[in-house]
Length: 634
Image 1 (tube, one colour):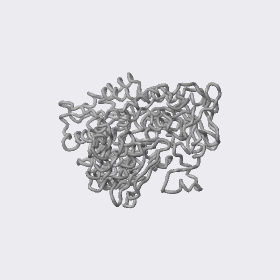
Image 2 (tube, rainbow, N blue to C red):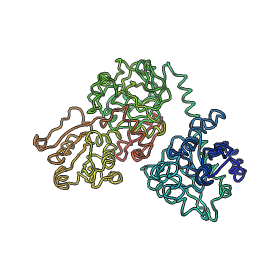
Image 3 (cartoon, one colour):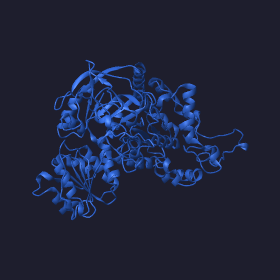
């Protein structure tokens, strides 16, 4: 905190803090956050400009870039790198991300900004009377101009601005605790807590601001409420500890299974139009170029049901369905270099070999790598065999190169997108198919421009992802079309400007949309898999330049049709697979955007189930009409 050495905190707040920390089973680290450099002031290279704001007074957790401070003033690096490394190496404190951060005044500013800049690096964050919006206060102006050369350079160290750029809550902080005295002499001019709460409200981040009547800015104010903060962090650190121990147990299990056949539960599709059957199966170790993973969460996709219902011409039985999952690498086969045991991965049914000789991977025009297409379509691994066997030793087919309705599965390395561990896998799994496909259809396949008009047919998860992507791309008019008006509120929330119940019209829906827009929509998207709807989507695309994109997969044997005149008059008809995303390159970026609060996905998860054996319940939920994505946690 402000001009803080260890005794400042220890003497004024320590007695209560230490006792509570002992009860909570945590350590309190009190760093000296002033760069004192050399006790001999005559030889000090850190200017003593102001004992509270600048120089040896320190306080702001930033790395100076302007002379003469740039040589020694490295508070951000000290708190985020040097100190954690020291504590881990010398005292085994804070290992495996088991650390929280708090601070007072300028130290409160540091705690908030450090935690918000690295949401995966800290378990929890709190502050006492923090400088919440430093680019808008005299202290911050003085510090940023002096240390960094400008106020603008300090924007990345402003908690209010960091939160204001988010569209979603932080993935790891269930709450941010702040205590502020009402009689604080700096409340109005310097601290601005209401600016921070407004930014938190905007992105739905929970933030608890306690306005303490009659308290000022002193360290004695901290002493009054330090127990609350230590308890706040202790609760969350213990929860994190339990998660770390659970992961360690899983890794121990992994160590015990490497190179061995694994027996586990799977939901096996024995035939079309039949319920899935829970069976104990065996999963062989990965061969060269393969990766065996433990499936943590699987989201049910309509493509799974499409195959289960017998509509897929490549559907083979018995098989293990599932292709939208979040997994942890258990072991790798010979030659695998891109992932290792313990990594988080998303299985991708559209692989990316990235070989220099692959004209598809090297082309910016497509994501359709054909490297393993032949065997994948046959329900087999690249060497032409299966890794699954039932209790009688008979092989079970793979599905889309994924087969994630199983506690363990084997993937081709080129089908594994390695992602950050900062997003829970039960959310990250959504980027394995539907959500990514809808977003990519807008951003990659059609490249929707700002101020465009868009029509979306079918408001399942894919359709809503199209709406979300179109809104993010700057579309000014988004028409949502479905026969179930109960889906319209979700569409409007994500950005739809108009909703059309096509079942209530007395004319073809394409004619209705052309009348609504005069000449049609600039971009239209079919997300239904119904060929008549695909035609309607094309025929309401804008005359002269409209583009219609087919996303939904039609049943086997169905064909699309329209009058050639529709194309002669300037319309383009195209399709997309996995939204044009190159899987191993782009999926990690989507996950990171979600972690950074730029790409919310929570609204897609409408149902959750625990245990692979609950997959049939998830299928029932999907058939119920109100389900977007049912996520099954294994």
